Length: 377
Image (cartoon, rainbow, N blue to C red):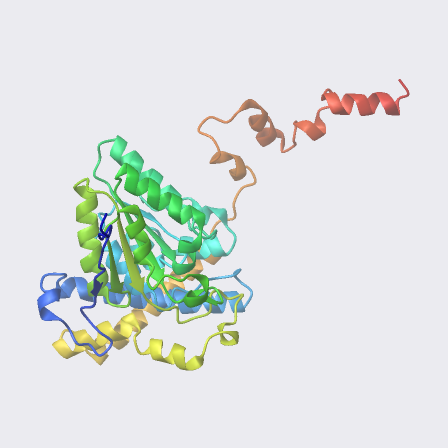
């Protein structure tokens, strides 16, 4: 038998607004209005201010370890704009603050979370956002499950999940992708390729030239975009959400981006990253390029920018105050969100603040034997 081609594919790379503020008018036609772009810019500035203040809170001992979002805001807002607030779901990792806030999460919840207050993970009613996921890759399975539930309910709700390049080397990622594709559920997978899995460069953790080519193995449509370009991200996200709503299944979007800060405040990226590389990416900052573009169009100027930054400082100061001065939790709060109807043994613990389980129950079989031995029986 002759040799034939069993499979062949190409992957598109999309860029609309580059770091020099050059805009592809043909590809960018109708992607978003100037008003939407201004809204996203203002939102990113607010989130960047929170990011910088959160870093200072950690360094001054008022907050635990914190992962800065700085440099990766475009992927978050570009996708969030394509989703319907209150209907679709966002299943984040830990660098998607901007998307979470756009979909209704109060900003101080993020600070509470990293301050160790579990109430930061108790999402308000109607906010379709899951808690932050620090374990790498596990939450993608949750996103697939949520999308499957939406399908079973005959809803066209979509789940969007974010993760880093390192997560695509995890087994959970492949299980989530396989289930999503096989069940044909409405998930948008957003791989944020920032080049580093903590301190390991992408080139050393995988042999794939791109992240998105991994989606081909699961028969899933995929595209690569400039992840620091709000237009390119939104362009791809709108198409992916449209497919999901139409019942056509999942999509994988690779956002090529860069974290401008350390992996977390417990990390020192100077030990493994070249400063020249970091400086090159600073010039590709998503906030900087949008400001350049809007200014060139006459939609923005220095005076408005200074006013925006002053407003951002005021907003973040109020957010920090809300997080630091939140009413302390009650001891009984531990029980309140565990079950809809509290089991009897836990109800007893809640009322007495004493355990009545194994360690305190003398009738428990193992303890009964020990008691008999002590008493000489």
